Length: 460
Image: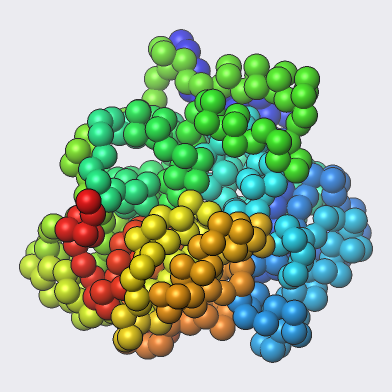
């Protein structure tokens, strides 16, 4: 029997197997930030255990960072302390840190791929659930808890049960205005938020093959939102071209050797999955969420469904929506384009192409937050900054920003925010804030119109 992409990468990293038990998996790359690492460092210090492979760890500051005046001292006491602790821990353990202001600083799941730290066939972990983003390169990448962060610090390995295998196929031609964000929101809406529990998911079919690496990262990023441990897409020429020439990518002969290996990773024809689903690309439209989990999504042409479930009704009550209601023409006061899901240069190009020559609606606070210093630089160099500023949008400095209420960029209570982030839980963007997940194109159109609009009517 053939092997899946997941099998090939997993099996290549098994150090040992406990009889009738878990396996010890070697970790190629450990990414850390200021939120989940302090307790793990403290545990090692208390037990007098050194960090095993500091050269396999890269740190960045992202969650607690302000997105204005990053050259000034951080005002929030807790955020300032966490950032200072990260700096101290990295210095004491000889770990590379891209802190605030560094040219490589950014959201951990944006800066690692763009620097070539993320490469096909790797195992990558981080104390952050959206580590699944890196699976776009054909890596096994997943989030870990604090105790596991300590485990990787101490041994560069993890004790794990091997997950089951799931494949989601999407084939056909996408409609105009449908972006990778819509594809994954559609999949989660169809399958539910628990459909991937216990699985690692591979995405296959021409729709994913034709996506850019940015698009693939958006899809894999949200695998966690359907309960999967992570998501993967087989590496191909698109992947190799993206990695080639990046700061930490292999060079010349070494790169060619790596590519030869990476080409062997794709799933064998006769490989078997524990679960498999297939969808037609033609069925997908621009998507919006209406509830308080990413599975509560509808096509732009649909109305909110009717259900008797108590948690469903509680969710609608929180959002102040009604069953059978259309979201078109719903007034919106906040728009956020950013997060580890949609803060790459492609996302801002899409937004700028729609915004160019238009003006932001007066009632909308529109925040554009690049995922890294390098993305911010590209926005400026490509003239996108001018487009955004002339249209009245606020371009901020890199960070996780309004994806989660851990920094200054919070959405006020009771306000709606059309957001390109990955979660719409109660209070995710601020206490009482109401989040509607959408693509960068939908978000840009909402900011211009001042209300949710059917983007398909605005495209040539």
